[in-house]
Image (tube, rainbow, N blue to C red; front, side, top):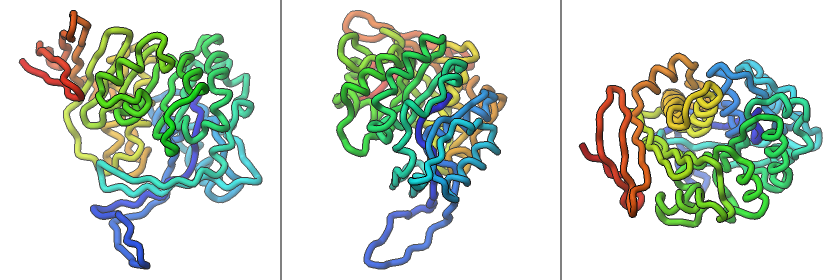
Length: 347
């Protein structure tokens, strides 16, 4: 089960997509209407990987809402729990992408009306895993009840994960978020979000705050997405860095959401956390091969094949520093240590 945002993305592609005000017209390489919303993209990517997925979200009774429902259903996502609001428009996003980077403008519309009461209890009870996306976009609607939903899901035997995404308000926290994270099995920020959530200036400091017992922001396991540098997995005192050979992105929209789907699929298929992160990295890497968040989302066979090329570096606490052992394909031993934000590797 995936909870969160569901809206079309108006995707603007080009080498220079910065608008020129003053009534100036600029030509770009392409504009398209695609599946958007972090939760919707994660749901589609998970379905592509072979999982049975239902999406719980809110859209308006308008053409944009019908577009999303049709596209999601056609991608194998169960949309029976998507709520249709007669009095609100479907949310919309304009994403201006220059390949590896993008700028995003969003009108929330109906997506910010989703509450815990909209989540069908019978579906929650049947779920093996419950993932929530874009917490900060829904913090005033879904936020008050998310911790209770996660508690109920875990009591029924499910695991949970949370990707807060970016906070447009800049507040980055609160009692409700802390309560939700306390019921989260895997917290899934990207690097910038981890720094903001922890209010730290270094990745090592962010890991310390987000995983330290009694500090309020405590996920049982933490996976920080590092973009083209892979992912950092933290399970108690043990850390793994997972990476793949670099790829050239056509458009990075939704790569992190596809990573989430790959990691969840891996965990549900019995992989260890770093192995699941390798599958997440592969899913995200393959997804950037075409414009939009879902067009190039891979199937399980393709993602697994690429994941087998992952480098997995294991770090353990050793006095004042970190030591490691490495699993690679092909196997190879290396040493590594942290310095500020940087991971230094040597033979």
